Length: 111
Length: 116
Image (cartoon, rainbow over all chains, first blue to last red; front, side, top):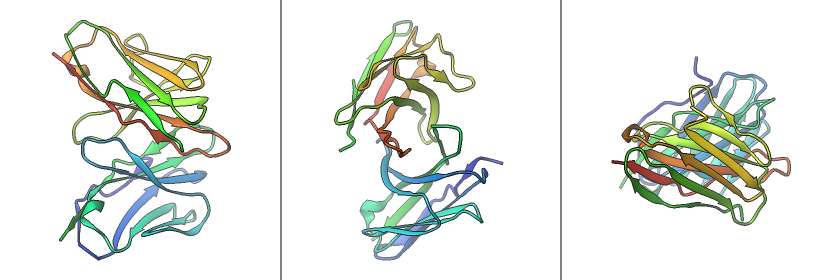
């Protein structure tokens, strides 16, 4: 079992819809969770961090964390074609200062 | 805030030569920096964790004598690819953590290395 799992996609959504990206992790003691966006040929860009159970909203983005289910998600409201990118879920587990990245989900927002 | 730069952005070198890539945190001090490699259409692969003033911690399977890492100051880490070969051609990306209790990493723009 991979430490951080994401569906590779592509996830295709129409412009204006809500895109829902999911991530599961295997280490129950994981503490910190991050979502990064990576455009093709570019480096990852941090878009959200979440540390406690529940929802965290920032503009059109909402991160959701459920530690009991070992599940973190990212919702993008009013999706735009410019949101088309690969979204990486990253997890920090206790005892390590590095992040474990998922393989990413490719999102395609079509007009 | 939290800006990380990398230099060069693109480099082409001949097989057998060495290439140095610099990673700088511009507006914060970074006790820890990280070096990643990413092949086309593949996921990020952590190569090593760079600790200021001490030896880097390499991930399993990464040759420490081939990928030399130096973290001489709180704002600068360097990665030297020694005796580069075509299979080392890749996108090398560094990241830095500002510390202060958080674990988020901010990435540099990356360096695209092509070995001919």
